[in-house]
Length: 340
Image (cartoon, rainbow, N blue to C red; front, top):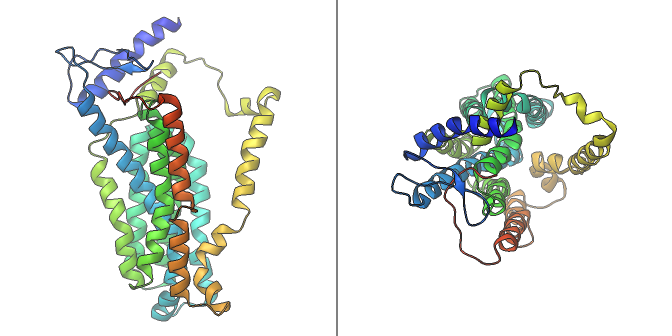
C-alpha cells in the first residue's frame, strides 16, 4: 500500500516541478547525497534551473520575514509623528501599537488549517495581500480607525508568515542546504527591524510606511515564479488515498505526545513573555523617559541587533554550522526542490 501511494504521488510532483522549472520528462532518482535528484530529457542534472528557483523561493520567504521585522519596529518610530499629525491620544496610539499582536494571534490560529487547505503558495499570496492592504491603510490614514485597521491587517499577515514561511522553505529546499537557507530567511526579521530603526530616524511616518511596503511588493513579484510545495502535493494525494484517516489535532494530547507539546508550547510562552514586544512597540517613549535621544537609541539598537552579538548573525552561523556538519565541506549538489 505504501509503495502504491509513493507511485501515485509522483505525477502530481512531477507536473508541478516541470511546470515551474521549465523541464520536461523529470525522472526522480536518488542523488549522491541521499536526496531525490532530477534529470532533464538528455539525462543531465538540472542544477542551474532548480538552483535559480530555490533562490527565488528563499527570496520570497526572506521578503515576508523582512516585512515582519519592519512592522514590528514601526510603531515605536512613528509614535511622535502620528500623534502630532493626526492628533491621537495616548490611549488611541496604544491601541494602534498593540493591535498588531492581536492580529498576529489570529493569523497564527488560522495559519495551520489554511496552509493545509489551500496550499503553502496560496497562503503566501494571502499574507502578502494582508501586508499590502495594511501598509496602504497606514499610508493613507487620516484617523485612528484606518490606522488600527492597517495595523491589524499587518499583524494577521505576520502571524501567517511565522508559520508558512519556515514550513514552505523547509519543504521546498533539499536537505543539503535547508539549514543555511532557512537561517538566512529567518534572520531577515532582525534585519528588517534594524533597517527600520536606521531609516525611520530620518524620514516621516508615512514615508517609512511606503518603504515598509516595498518588500511586500517584491514578494508579490516573486510569487509568480515559485512552485507549490511538493510535500503539500504529496499530502493532498495521501489525503485522497486515505479518506478514512483518523488524524486529528486531539491526537497531540495523547500521553505519548503530551510532554512534547508541553515543552514546545512552554518554550513559546517563555519566549513571548520577556516583554520584547512592549519594548519594540514603544521604544521611543522609553528612551525619552530615560533622558536618552530616541534617534541615538534607535541607531544603537539597530547596530546591536545587526551586529555579531545580535540574533541575525547568530541565526546565520547556526544554519551554516548545520550545513558544514552535513556536508563536511563538500560541494553543493542542489538540483531539485524535493527530497525525502
